[in-house]
Image 1 (spheres, rainbow, N blue to C red):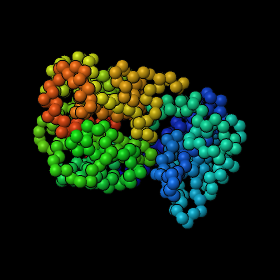
Image 2: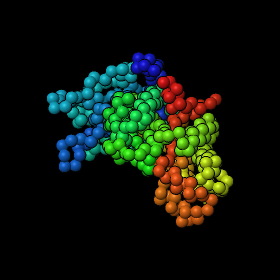
Image 3: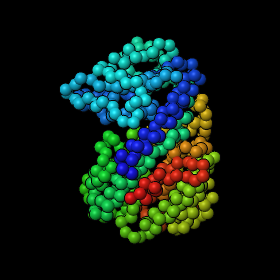
Image 4: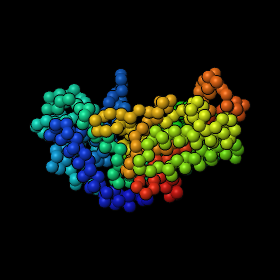
Length: 443
């Protein structure tokens, strides 16, 4: 989708999104006894013993309202029944370039006030009971702002974040299109013999992202590096022998994230066959997404499918149920099946059972699952099963019992590191929408 078409579509979807944001905040304010809410986008911070700033990351509570993601010291002031106010930081500065005037489909929905200094925001803080959401600064102490980030209010906002508006889903659709472009460039670079770091550079060039704009640090892993789940090193030298390539990399669009993983074999070998099997059952899982699905059961289904795949390829000899119950699959698939995604890569609310902040426990023996809720239409999450050959976990399994595992076959695959396939999926009433597969199909 080209940029002009995208912006037209976003313009048509944004009013309903903003109405939803107002409604959610109105309900949260009423239920917690506040009259207004002030949402701070966050400050820029200087590194310790330095005069350079860390990359700025805007608060998700702020960017839920509007796509201002790169300008610190901005505020939204919302009072139910009134137009929201945007306090937009725009100092007079010749050392650094201040933010441009805001423009776009969303600007006309706000009363805009420019701030030359951070303290100028104090004049716009309403009287009455004011809730504050965001990063707290001690200078706010005399601004009629008390009890920052009241947990009952934050709980309600976080719980509601699970339901994405069509505007948000469109932003995530665009983020997937950008990331798919990067993944295709990364695979080409891998086939051409590039190093991990060179692939990283090709990915950023293809997505038109700076490193600070990535939703998370790219995982670009050759060989055994793919067995490190959050591998971040990115070797600059081209290795002598390359057997496999795992890339876990996303993109951002208007503050919304995508999160995609693909795995490739250097040769058309047994590891390529394993990748194809993981890809096949990952697509089966994605197709099974439906309203009312308990994600805990979904995660356990993924483990049974992983067990079937391990047996099919000769890594284990026991049945699927036994492999799951005895923890064999957890040695090969140690992380959770997925997580909510949206304003944050690991979006909030994954364990919440209600607006009060009560939580839903993870299945016993699966401590790293990030999502335990029953999913509903409008929820968006990742589906990312994997099979890995992680030395420490395999040694632990061998020392614990070791039965039911073909260790010679497992040892032969350690050089590949592992396989992970990950897509971003929207729950719909009729059938799931796989944002990632659609992005790759778009070319």
